[in-house]
Amino acid sequence: GAGVSQSPSNKVTEKGKDVELRCDPISGHTALYWYRQSLGQGLEFLIYFQGNSAPDKSGLPSDRFSAERTGGSVSTLTIQRTQQEDSAVYLCASSFVQGFTEAFFGQGTRLTVV
Amino acid sequence: GIQVEQSPPDLILQEGANSTLRCNFSDSVNNLQWFHQNPWGQLINLFYIPSGTKQNGRLSATTVATERYSLLYISSSQTTDSGVYFCAVVRDDKIIFGKGTRLHILP
Image (cartoon, rainbow over the protein chains, first blue to last red):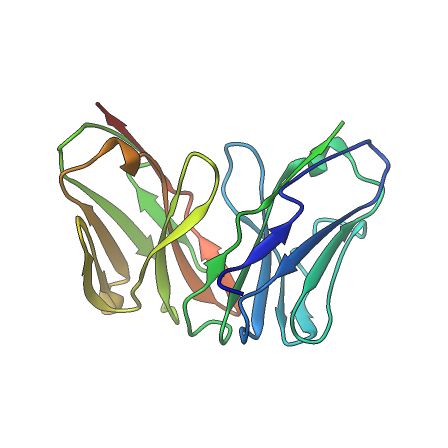
């Protein structure tokens, strides 16, 4: 696609429910990143993928968070048993090659846990 | 890990004024980008600038990699320039962001 696409744009969920957030990177980009931004805060690194593999999962805040990437393209971030502190904007970015080329961000998914 | 520091944290200017935003980083990096986060939260790419100088309209940026800093210049500010400006570097396969400079342009 022309840009990084994330869905849904907004998600309101009840505490304790599971949610899935989707990221469709720019075609041909092999590196994919997930970030989280709480209200008024900076960007917190969650995880990155090179192809389908995720060498570094250290940024995931708890074992309720998981992510996968299939076919080297679309990625899904899953949050199980959501908590109110999970409320944030979740941003996805992609680049041609990790670390050495320009990264582009999607518009984000605003998650609200009530 | 690498530290990315931006200054000033907040800046309030009158429309038409010029400004310089600074980004210092504590170690060598593979690349550096400047982003503008608009009021709707979208991160807009401004410059991909590991070194050297680039210009795009009223905006320009300079990175001196050997001295570990980058500068973003905004000339003739407009209200649409308001938002948060982030500097980001890549280190150990992570994009590491500074805390940003929040810019308010008053009409």
